[in-house]
Length: 222
Image (cartoon, rainbow, N blue to C red; front, side, top):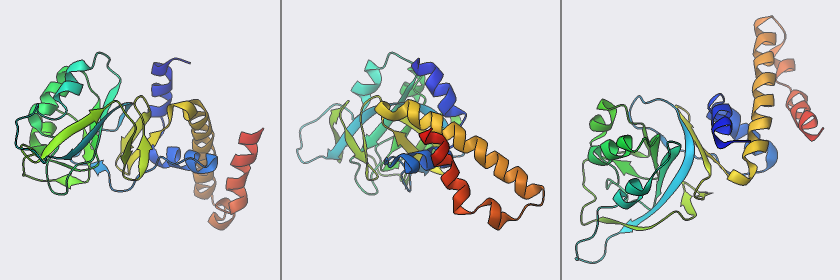
């Protein structure tokens, strides 16, 4: 199945449903604390990973992340940054403008962003731990890119799938994306039916009994 079709199907779900699908499959991917840093839209795409770290030498360096942005050639990318320093920015509005020009779908930071109003003013989605005003210059450097990084306790590799909305950010390993989406679609359908049952007067204790969720596992195994 094409990547675009998978992204469209993933975009029709939400992070809650994708997290549930990962749970059913015994996979990690759901994170805590990486939330929208302005009232931005959901982002769904494929990870371009960047590893950052504290600067320890005085010599000038390229600004972090700029080489990664310049190499992007497709319109399905989400920048995923790890290794940020507490309270120090690793994203700002100049980078946001550059990323938007490259049709990047958004940025997820296991860290902090500055100039968040600048990102908001151009409609560029940014998810992360928080905002700051303290510059990364002479404090944070880029160590590597397009590698497996640890983001809020989850290992994320280049080209893994990303979905982020108001509840947070979830990563799906590319090797499992079709299985996760298929199960997510069944979970979504089943939960819609459960909501309708409660609205129709059925006992919520019965509707939300563990056996109802176990039935999703049975359907999946078949």
